[in-house]
Amino acid sequence: MMSRKNIIDVLFIPLFLLLVIYPLVALLGRLTGGGISETFQDIYFWQSFKNTLIAALAAALLSLLLALGFGYYHLFNRNTIIYKIANTMNDLPIAIPHTVAGLALLLAFGRNAFGFIGPTGLAFTLVAVVMAMFFVSYPLAARTISSGVDQIDPEIVAVARSLGDIPYKAYLRVVIPALSEALFSGFVLSYARSLSEFAAVAMFGGNVPGTTQVLASYVFSKVEEGELGMAITASAVCIAISALLVATLSFMNYRRVKDA
Image (cartoon, rainbow, N blue to C red; front, side, top):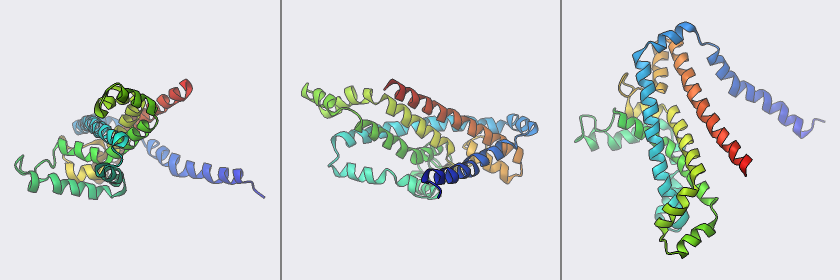
């Protein structure tokens, strides 16, 4: 009779190789010199590359800023209605289809509500790209920060309070400095999630080459145009950036465990 461990080995290893590793190998194996050359000579590729890095950075920083606010409520105001609503709603952007998220952003910040800004409101601008990326990446930052808050020794906060610090001062002076690892992890996770977003960005930010196009929508456009070599090259760039972020996070976690 096969042991439980052997059953896990038999199921996990081939399924992991088939469903996770093989698709990436299949994509990277189709890279060609011609596709790389053509893509790297395309000005719209570099514009989408720049848009992606800038918008993802802005979205990740905004996610951290709001997540720190949630962390404050998580520490000091868990019994308030604001916290309970925020805690319930935080994961909703992950659960709903991102086309729905994009449509919600479009209706909320498009020309009907924000027409005073321009003919399309905030829609189809780089600001819209940032907002779409933020909408889907903020939950990761919020959960990371709240987990970091839970790991802080309550006595540190109690000492700060006993010395006269009101809650927000104790949070700024004591808690946030102790959240350095959570802040870094939250930033990397939010940045990586922002890089990968397509549906909400395309719906709210549009897919305008040279203006609001990002790498994910660039890949989609090239597939539609039949430029598979260019789509594969842009996809490889996305994988390389994501792999660098994942490796950085893994290295930081390794150092944290080693120093513990």
